[in-house]
Each structure stands twice: as C-alpha cells, then as structure tokens.
Length: 80
Image (cartoon, rainbow, N blue to C red; front, side, top):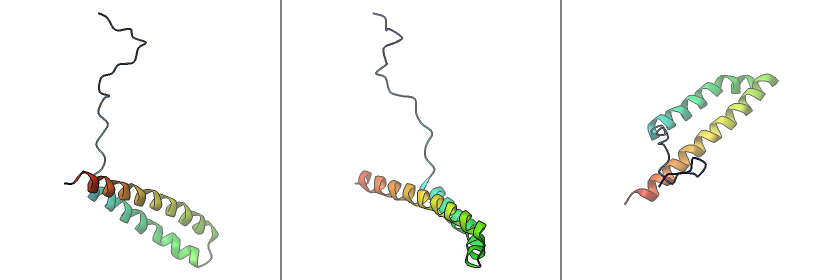
C-alpha cells in the first residue's frame, strides 16, 4: 500500500528546538529590565523619545515575564 503525498502523515512531527532553560529565561528578563533603566531615568527627566523606548521595553518585559509564568505553571503541572 502506498501513501498519497497529498494525504497528511499521521507520524510525529519533527522535534522543535528545546525552549531556553528557566534560568536563561529569567536572566533574559533581568537583562531587559537593566537595559530599560537608563531610558527610564531619561523619561522621568522629561525626554519624550526615552519614554517611547521605555514603553516598548515594558512590553518586551511583560512578554518575557508571561513566558516565565507559563513555564512555571507547566513545571508545576508535570511535577509529581
């Protein structure tokens, strides 16, 4: 019996690259916060362009924090 190439295979998909370790994810979060600090100080001083950069950085920080939160929840649900 031959398989029709147009028919999707039911085999397991190719493995996806392993996600960063929890420690690497947390280090990235700390790096993002540290990188935003200078622009934050400038924004507090009234620099509007720095304020825009800080808001962008905060979105990146939020996304990274959410990724860590999801990983922690996954770890919790798979730990006996």
